[in-house]
Image (tube, rainbow, N blue to C red; front, side, top):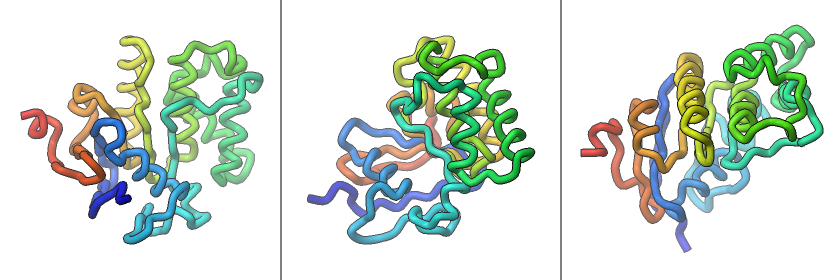
Length: 206
């Protein structure tokens, strides 16, 4: 059974590419290959020229999964600190600088000493995006980052993502064409494992 069929996809430096398609189209399989959870039976995937399984990639790649993976008893600050070390940020000053930048980018300073279990869903989502962006990775994958949040939170996340584009390449998985139009330079539509069209969101909408 072929889940992906002759998929060729590249994301340019400092580009936001929106990855659109219905459930079961192959988007999640693609993400799992890029994050080394799956190995393709043929072909290859690279992150900045390196295989996803290369240990160096953990510093080059940030991932915000579709569902928040957080520890309810830990504070926002301790989450960011733990993930900074996991991602290979070294040195006390560099770790602190990465945490401060993530807190500022996600507008989380007022929540940094709160336990994650006490946060609203939208604030937890912003924290998950902040974790993905720790240490300014070259590539960030955002898997449906605004699913299930209210309109105000969605717009604040859009503003956050727009700022992130200044220093990283972003692969945005979304069902929302409005989100793609607002944020993406290019978008691609996946159907049955194939990328059937690629272009600007405005062109695809026509």
